[in-house]
Length: 339
Image (cartoon, rainbow, N blue to C red):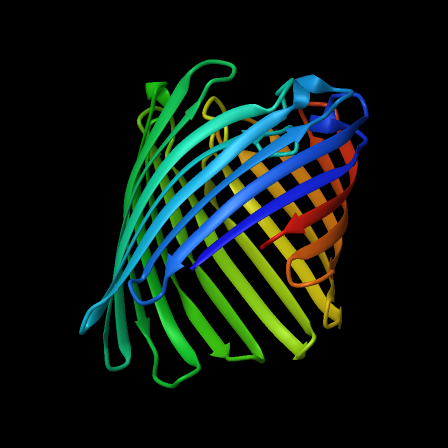
């Protein structure tokens, strides 16, 4: 099956990147999805161009190419995935608040997992290899080699006991940033299909850098989905964990984030969505903190089987104890064609 799509958007941004003059916005986003359910194969390619006529220094372009394969074997399921992407981080992304223009980040990631199931037990080992390169303000690289193991015990069809172990080795072009990460989590997962689901894991994470003091922090991951009716869904996620920066020249930090989203089908062809998030970074080895608050509201109207129209409003606010505060209001109108 082949699914092409093309989106064109226009709108207004009051403060691109948190530092630029107000500008109109123009965007173009083509994509192509190819998949074969029988073979378990999927491929995806997408591009995006974002332009600001009154602030051209904030223009950005990106792309994503991904391949995936799922093999159903007699006692296990093997999943392989490869993705290559190029994206731009703005001043409303954690650890990138000093950028005068969008910072380009190019990354490649390969994931392999094998899910073994027997009775009430499921064992899933995973391997990750990832690289990232940023060209601003200098050419910096990072390589991450990691592996994990997830054990799930499901005594009934709804509730599961979950244990997750993970270790990563980070290598940077600046050797002083090199580090090993370790995480251990245990918790519960519950899934009542079409009604609700939740997942709550808690544990500990440790970072051992080649230079500097080791860090040990408590970790929590939570997620909940609820469908009060067939037309409405409510989703919530929260996490407290060790995180590496999107831009490779910044220090690592403890990340605390939460997100709440609501979707309601007003009519069969009109969907209203709203989402709010709060993210905080507390950096290691220095007294720097950063908070980003975001809100997005969208109304999507499916005109017919091929076209849909979406109008959206987004608000971003950045607060930090080492740089001036900034916020932006963004309004867009997007037409999508899916033949």
